[in-house]
Length: 288
Image (cartoon, rainbow, N blue to C red; front, top):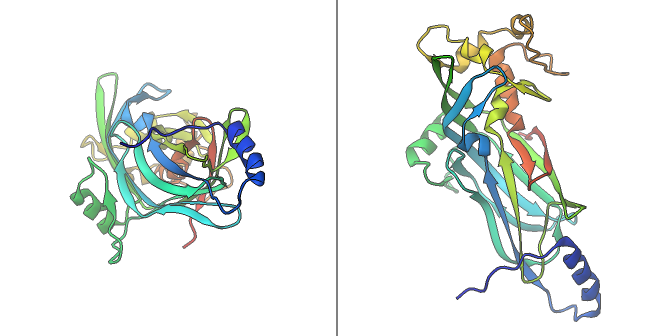
């Protein structure tokens, strides 16, 4: 029977690191690490500031890779590509590793990018994702695929969007017991777990730097009036016209973003909203 995992505070680990200097250096203490992911605003519905109740039916994310390393560039653990559905409740595992050196592992990176067919490594799927979902995302080269519905004042709309953005999340850190901790800290004979929180509501923000949640412009984009909002229809909505209605749709220095479809696509780079309960990861386009 496996012994229960011990969760050790950062202060306790610091004390252990000091004490370890007097111990036999040939005896290397070990522990384990886990990285999970959740997405409360993909699992449950949310309401925009202009009154739309939004609920996702699918929120498929292709996690290209996860790596945990030290500042000394020693790689502690890595995970290959998988597709998860963030509508599914409870934490989903992104990486799990045992028998790892007990020490700080400061560099946690996560890449969310287009799914591709790799003859050497098969992309894993985590239930309720099906092989047909994987085939679709690989065929279309998608990093994120969402389906959902929204309602307001008796009006109902659906949406189906697929995105191919390729984003690297790095420099992940959080406040743990009053101390800013970079990455993970594996304690001796214990476990450190960090949750990567993704936000389903980010696709409805009205500012690339944050802002309020808005649905009016998105759900008014139903050009063919079939009740389903597509990315092509969003691309037909110039941001200048939307700003004239009072909505900011601010793009900062990204002046090349001129329509609502491109704006929502840019918001996908904000998908990771927290590391642990209060921390952040820096997002940037992944290198080709």
